[in-house]
Amino acid sequence: MTEFISWNMQWGDSLTMFQEMAEQTGIVPKALESKPSLNQAQTDLYSAFTEMAGSRPYSMAGPLPIPMTVFSCYCDLYDLDRSDAQDLWRAVRSIDAHWMNEVSKRQPQPKTK
Image (cartoon, rainbow, N blue to C red):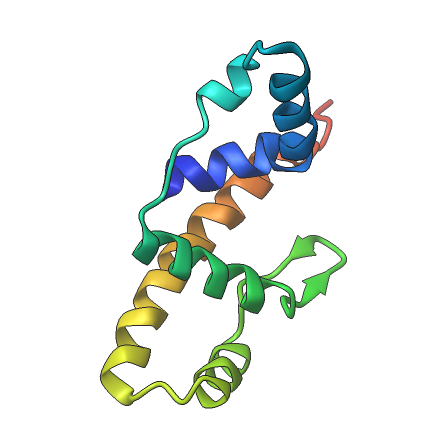
């Protein structure tokens, strides 16, 4: 899953363009060839993550982790039982930590004198 998150953060905005290039030219771009695939459970988990991430708060320093309140609303909306919610929270926190780490790598570093 982490490979998919990293790939998506780097190339996700260009996915449609890559697919069109492959269809039109018959040549598959290297970025598209390297796209990790997800099984159905991973796809569902990624969909849940992106839905919650849309309500992520931001500060002047950048994005903040997905808050428990957003997660709780998600669980209420989809009527998840406690056990499923606990499993999902562990997975979402892990994915979110990786996402936050990837974002921090892309932030400009302060200049040192």
